[in-house]
Image (cartoon, rainbow, N blue to C red; front, side, top):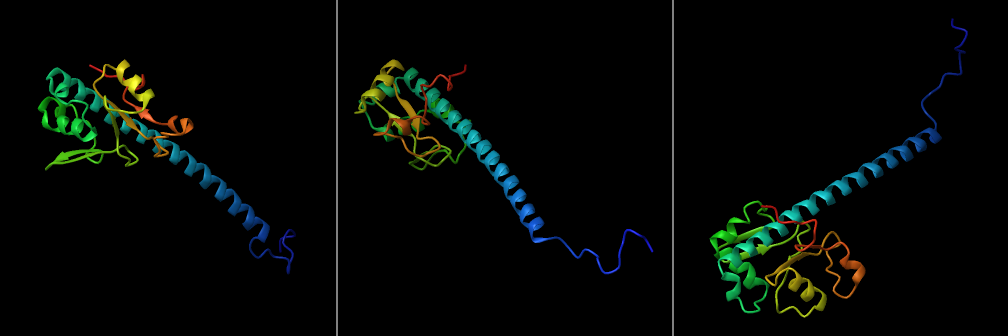
Amino acid sequence: MNAAIRPGRAQVGISLVEIALAVVLLAGVLAVVAAAYNHVLTQARVGETQVLLTSLSRATVALDEHAALRVLQDDDEQGVLAAICADPAASAAMHDVSPYLWRCSSGVIRCVDAWRTPIRVVTRSTTDAALGQRLQLAGGGALYESAGPDRDFGTDNTARRMDNLRSDDPDIALEP
């Protein structure tokens, strides 16, 4: 018989402390994986929303070239989006956008960001002085804004505006 094994002292499983340690380690690993997944998902949604905002800006440029946007006298959001739908050159600029974010068919217009929050269209009729100034700096056509990951435009709270995505941001540049 092997001298290292004593009869009557055989280990029968693992202790409660070892089980607790394994559960804590597993929970820690899962927390890190969940945080990394959430970060990657948020970055993907930001990228998808930037594609939408860039496409809307291109569509607005196409409307300006066809003088269709100038016909809209201080129109509301739906008027600008309807003009994009009606103009073939403007709607062609929207082909890169996911149908979950932009849909224009049978008179129904859907324009939401990757968090499924409606896109804000800023036109000349805006009452927000800061957005009106940004609109003038951008050329006066229309600006598009996403509420971002917190799904809050932060109209009354400047801190909540920090994660908003706008079509006039330098990160969302129009490429030829």
